[in-house]
Length: 140
Image: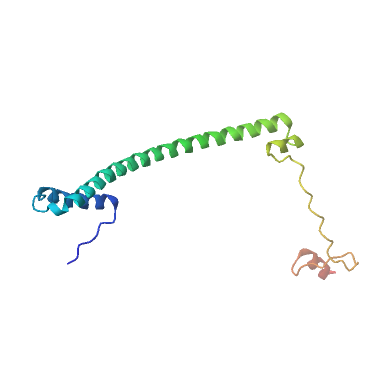
């Protein structure tokens, strides 16, 4: 039966620790493995320290992310307030607003007038079936 391999750093470091303990206890019987055991123990010690440092930095990163989110939220509110104040000062139609990245109000574009229906020159437009105009025309 094959043993499942550890895939996480914590699992691998635990596996190394479980291997190092019996190697250290049986060092007298395994003198030819002492150099490799010492190297693995040094790697294990360094890896544990780096893993702890990584966890501490992850926590710090989360705290900095929270602080940044709060600052951006407050800054966005202040930027909105300042934009409103600039519009209030110069007026909503002032071209000066463009310097602040704001769009001056230039009025609404007028909708083009629709083309007259029944452009055949008769002046009367056909009515849809069942409309009151058609009922009046049918009665005459």
